[in-house]
Length: 133
Image (cartoon, rainbow, N blue to C red; front, top):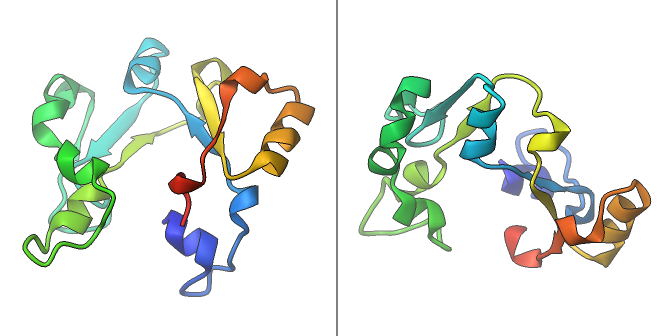
């Protein structure tokens, strides 16, 4: 999805990576604030992916392929299902309260400055281009 947003595809206009901000939270924070959520073991719209609810959270490490999720490369000629598994999703079904945000990742110092100007503490912002395409 981020690749499509950043580069434009299928009618989606390209957006500069400088304008894309990752809001970082955690499964623990979502649980602590009793938010509704689901998660999938692959891309959510793929018919091979399964959808799980809160009751499945204790088994999340067994249900998801964290090796594929953390892999740098999406394509593997020896594992044609890797891309789908890498795209596993954790979807919060409502707004994420600001107190559940642990930090932010931005593309460059200009994006960092924009967040700081909006009142975000510098210690909550990480600049890291490798999270972008």
